[in-house]
Structure formats: structure tokens, C-alpha cells
Amino acid sequence: MTNAAVDDARDAMREIFPETPLQLNEHLSRRFGAEVWLKREDLSPVRSYKIRGAFNFFRKALREGSRDRVFVCASAGNHAQGFAFVCRHFQVHGVVFMPVTTPQQKIDKTRMFGGPFITIRLIGDIFDQCYAAARAHVEEIGGAMVPPFDHADIIEGQATVASEVQAQLPDGVRPDLVIMPVGGGGLSSGMTGYLEPSLGASAFLMVEPAGAPSLKESLKAGRAITLSKVDNFVDGAAVARLGDLNFEALKHFSESQVMAVPENAICVTITEMLNIEGVVLEPAGALSLAALAALDPETVRGKTIVAVVSGGNFDFERLPDVKERAMRHAGLKKYYVLRLAQRPGALRDFLNLLGPEDDIARFEYLKKSARNFGSILIGIETGRPENFADLLARFDAAGLGYQDITDNEILANLVI
Image: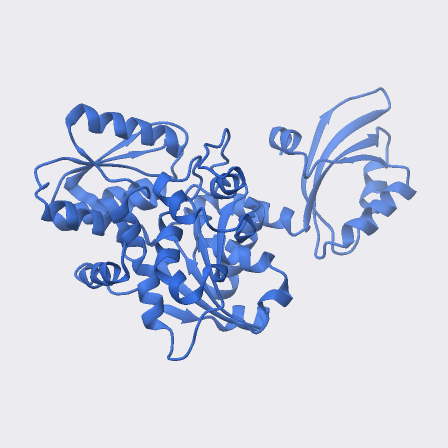
């Protein structure tokens, strides 16, 4: 990949969509005491940067005479939408393999973008399972696989994000830090390859969900590894194995340049950007901004930061879960199992322990655990995290038996 080739791909893309904006965000700039620029890939036609790699792959394959082949891809959603959009643009047929767990909104949008030129097949619970099924289908029909990240033309296409950023920054403005989300590594390998000669290797921070840290673990091991377990909450970036080409492009970076952000912290960013800025982000789209919030404020103060925001394919049926996770991460909501005496007035005595900002969000009688005591599941929301310390002090003073199960993943999943 050369910068000239990337610039050529960028110019060719203008036939299907204009460059996405690079916006100076006043809210984040004030909050962090920095100059924070957002590269709004959520404003592409498919609300993510994935359309870039797909377009670049197709334009080269068709130029080489592959129009009569069936194109195949596997995707948790965003690559599928870019693939479908490009299939329709070039009027070639494609088959999209998606995990069964893909949000319905992404499935519907993929079908809308591709129209009669695509067929959707739902297979497997995670990306890697449907990717294996897609590769088997390609072998069976002699089709053309369009990888989501592990291909030189895909990497070159994603690198056009960096080409646009460089052209869009005001004269004389040079980023001190470029923050990028990482799933399979297509965007990060492309952007670092384009910008590293001018910015240096230390200018990059790559961000993964804590439940799928494939790049971080691969850098630790010194080779591309396959994770044994993946949390697919951040479905656009939950990949068990980084692409081989992508790892080769990224293996010289320090493990410290990859941040694994907890899924619940990502939910805080989603709700903040929606409530304050009116920006709709899916979990993968919020990765870069969640990392910015997790950095030591002194390390970013006064710096010029470019954060890639991608994508915006959020299924609003997930909003209650996102809000729940965000409140728990912010320390504003906790769950307890209480051992409450079974006597008249016991519930009233408990309610009198609550503070003025405490509110009961869940109350459920679990079972009669003894003749004189019963177990209660209770969820409490409050206005400030420090209120819980005062509440627990009152619990202790009253001799109330309780267990905090908020962060007990196994128990919380069973009863919450």
C-alpha cells in the first residue's frame, strides 16, 4: 500500500459518496481541555467506514474481469451494509453471511442497501462462525470472497479515512493523537500505514472492547492468536482473531498503545453522546470516545486529537440495556439481595433507610429462606455514586443483612 494508491482510491470513492466530515467538537474539547476532532464515519451512506474497503475491493476485482462471479462476505453488520451498497452500485450479485445474533436493524438495512442484488444467510452466534460458513460457500460455488479486513485492497480502502483526515485538517494543524476502533484491524492497519511516516508510531491509540481484545492479546503473544471466548455486545468489533495481514501491519506497536474498554463504559459514552450531542452511536462507534474518557486527563490536555467515530447503526431496542449498563458503570445503580425480617413493619423500616436521592428501580421477593426471614432482590438508582456508601452505612447500623450482586456477572445475569 502506498499513499498515492490510497489517494487514488479516495478520489474514486467520490462516485458513490462525498467525504465524511472532520468536525471540531466543542463539547469534548471543553471537557478534556484539548482540541478534539471527530472523523464522522457514522455519516457515510452506511453509517460506518466499511463501505470504503468494500468499494475498493470491488472496483479492483471488476477491473480485472470478475463481474460474472458471485461475491460473498461475512459480517456482523457494518461490512455487510457496505458490501450490499457496493453490490447494488456495481449491479453484481452478492451473498451475505451474518451471525444469528446480529441486531435486526442491521439485517434490515443490509437488505435495503442491496435490494435484489444480495441474499442474506444467518449462520452462527459470532462472526468467526459465519465467516467459516462463508468461506465454505465460496469454495462450493467458486465465488469471490470479500473479506471484512484481512485483504490488501480492503486495508487500502479503509486507509482513505486517513487520507481525508490529512486533507481536512486546517493548515498547520497536526494531530498529537489519533484514536481508532479495532475489530479485525482493517481500519487501524490502513490508517497507521498512511499516517505513521508523518506522525510517528507513538501518535496512535487503538481501542478494542474488553470482551474481544484480539489485538492486545496478539501483541502480548507476539503473534496473531484466536481468543477462546468473545463478548459480542460490541458486535461491530467483537472479533476472535485479528487478520493476519493486519497483525503484520500492527505488530510493531506497543501493547500499551491498545486500550481495552469495558462494555459498560462504552454504554456511558453512547448515552452521553446521544443526550448531549444528539449523535447516535452503536457500541463499536463509541469505542474511540470511550477510550478518550478513560485516558489520564493530563495526558490529553492541550493536545490535538483526532478520534474516528464509526458506526451509527444503533438498534434502539437495545437502549434500555445500554442505559442499564451505563448507570451500573457510573455507579448510579446497584443491585442487592436483602435478608429481610418477615414481620409487620419490616419493609417500612427498610424504606426509611433510603436517602433523598435513592429510588427503587426493582423489587422482587425471591423465596422464604427461613421461618423468620425472606430474601428480596432490589435495584436502587441514585443521583450520585457516593450515596451508596452512606446507604450501606445505614444498612450496617440497622443490622440489615445484604449482598451486593451488581458486579457478580454470573449471579447478576441469572436474576437481573
